[in-house]
Image 1: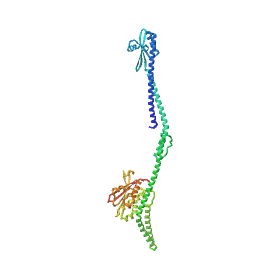
Image 2 (image 1 turned 135 degrees about the vertical axis):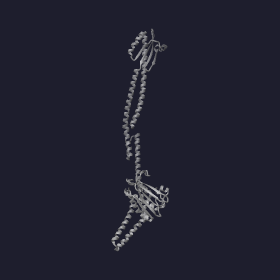
Image 3 (image 1 turned 90 degrees about the horizontal axis):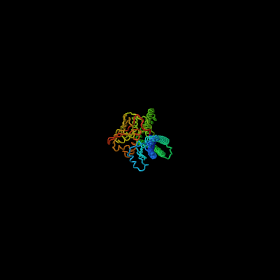
Image 4 (image 1 turned 60 degrees about the horizontal axis):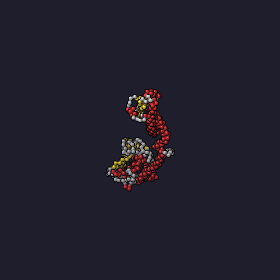
Length: 470
């Protein structure tokens, strides 16, 4: 029900009550006035009959006069009562003959008894007035009052609805439109400048819109700053990992450089130039691949999500960390399903290298580091409430290190929390968690103190997941 209709109903009910009360008072007043007029008319007629009786003096003359009177006043009936009655006895006790009248009010008629003192004895007259005509007039007055009330109420309701639609709706519709625009993200102001309740509401809505615009700008700035900060942290983490690999990579590059130098000397001496040139080219390609892998890992660039084979990505991570693993007497094993997911390979590679570096450092006495890619499975209720049900692939990195306590596992993804004392920054796993969350995935950790750890992360398969950048 609209506001205009509600106002019309309220004013209509109030008007009906008011007019009904006024009509009842008016009708009651008319009824009392009508009854008073009848009583006065009866008394006036009785007084005239008493005066006529004193003039006529004889009963027969009065009887004849009364019979002729009925033709001139059809609404009244005048009759002579011959036998003594209680009324005649009552009237006989009254001393003033002109006041010897007795009035009886009934529902259907009014009756007035009058006593006449004649020369040949007293006479009692009964004057009757029928009330049916008065009731008919009263009913017509009531009907007229009801019809008038209904007509006034209808006219009043039409006027209220029209005014409400013209005034109220004209003011409220822009407020409704403004609210809908705000809910859809369009922050527009209302031009209502009236100094009334609706004008005050429009001002408050405009104030709310201004605050929402400020909040939206603030959120956008904070999101941009957070994205920039996270990207810097990820880049710093990549540089940190690259620093750890620098010494071993220098050794890896030094070997082919020595080969290149020796073969160049042999060419200079004229020893099989064609064969030595081919070996130099092979070693140069090897140096170029090592350098490109290192630069590609350290390079800061925007998100580039593509269809990526996870098993090949694990192979690249193994190649990148092979010198560090060899130096620590760690064997890297890659196995599993060749699943394809839509991800940013450089970021997922960063996750893998972080997890693998942690695993290698957790085994100072050497051991086996296993990278395993499981076949996609449908997960109906992922542990993270923010991600939908669907097909996910699990990538696991398992080591044979010392493992972690339950307390360490609950805090392992907190920024700046580390189990490596001075050797760690506490940012590696925090950055990894952010990257996996961007891809609508999540982490799972299974670790027992003294029995190694397994870090698993889940990535969605078959759909482009996550936002294109953070």
